[in-house]
Image (tube, rainbow, N blue to C red; front, side):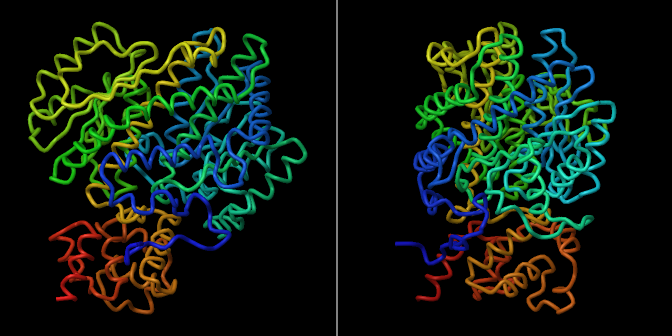
Length: 593
């Protein structure tokens, strides 16, 4: 029987799929760690199997468009000195753009070609480490950042990534491309139907995202643009597109670009589908370790629930994926910046940002040396340290460093070890919990391109790391009470999209009108039970600015929406027990006695 406090699934036909509740995970917050992992596994299977009757990543239409984009990349590879490929996005999409650009520029350098892949992330390089969600609302910043990156290029293939077809920052860039088709070829990558693109007008423009999509479709029909919108279904945690939408983004773009490089250098006609099937194998073998993933998830959940921390210590690209996973926890779960924190061997030199964010904000230092000097001395039994290692990144010297670091850490330690054919050569007995993802080299190599085996092996291993990390951090926050049913109940209302998502969540949860739900959210933001009429007419931008200075905005609003709590009473209840489901259960028991 469904819980009384069920967050209702949207019934509107036009509700964006990425915002919907996934039927599989409606009660994921009540499950054991292993149950959580199994449901995450089922939801991720929809990337390959598809969702309902919609076209997904392995369907002909999507593959055909992906192949055409890949063919365009081949043309651009003919002149890397004057052409550019730009990948742009906000939040997770921008961070993945950074990783993918880094991967394929390295590939060009190995072949003595000029690197021509560029990335743009709203909020700049700092946002790779620390979320800056509010930046995605800026139309003018989107245009300016694109002009800056492409100033010297004669021809530009622009790939705008926005999972929900909603980010104004990316809409502005796509619109700029459409206005200058003599220079730009625009590509839209997202995971909603084009008809579901956001329809509200963007601040700073007379256009909505839907207007931009309609213009893109018109140019696509003329062969001057591409719209790539496979449907992979609702996320395991509603709206958390860092999960399977992020995974699908990484897989699709790597498949498109890897095929382009393979065809350019080897002249073999191999489609995008072959590469995507290699990731399906990675998915299967990663979740064969579900029990070990669940064990690590449980340790992480116990650490966070007891007031401790989870620290990732990673190497090279596996470590960069750990940085990304950690950076996503504050906006997704209302977590503190240090609740889940990642450190990269070699620091910014290994990350490769043009400017080290720590020069302006020392608290953003990310090297193992910073962990050793600032965090190691304060570790307690509540903390968990997880090493994130891929066999390709390891050598004897690094293995010795890992052993030395392990011996200096006197708290719980775990490791994620990934490799094809063999695992990183470290002593697994040093760890209380160890996830060993051994990918089948012989099977995967049948999908790889001749001459690009090393690169394809690397991106396959990266996906295994991403799936494991996403499961651990998501499950740990579920255990901490940051998820109710399958909704992020402590998300930060840090931009227009998230503000309206929060209001909608309160509307569904309390079964209220939109106006009453807005009043509950504003009551929480301004700590007033009776919201003045003037507040209702104030701009969303003002509310967002005030919300970003507060904690527990959404938990307070949700409790307020039940009609059983004032803001003060809700605050006191959450001080005693931060888990909303527990607070509501206690309140129900109290009323029944």
